[in-house]
Image 1 (tube, one colour):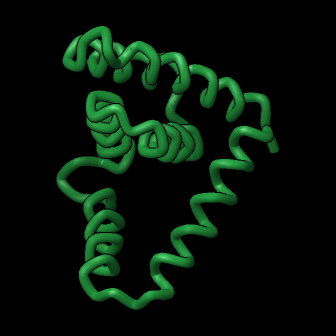
Image 2 (cartoon, helix red, strand yellow):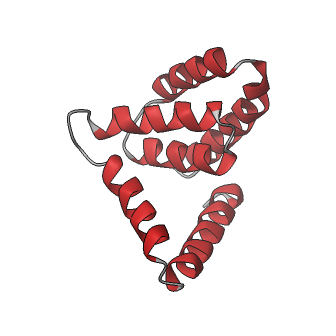
Length: 115
């Protein structure tokens, strides 16, 4: 596994476990809501992941971008689909999104190395 992907996943899992171990009802409900929001519904899961990716890029959340990139990759989205979604994010978010776009490309490349 690419080091950048492994490092992200290890840290995310470790901290999510720590957060959820505190057994805070509000935080657990937010985590659950997040999981359910990205489940199949009127919109398919791939579309929801791309929406999450765009929102994350516009909000400049690198961890969120990485999460949605990896999920999109695992769902079988093509790089062209992801890049098109990121182009919308850059258009909507403006040039301040470009550094996040760079890191998104780097992370996607790391995902592809794992093939």
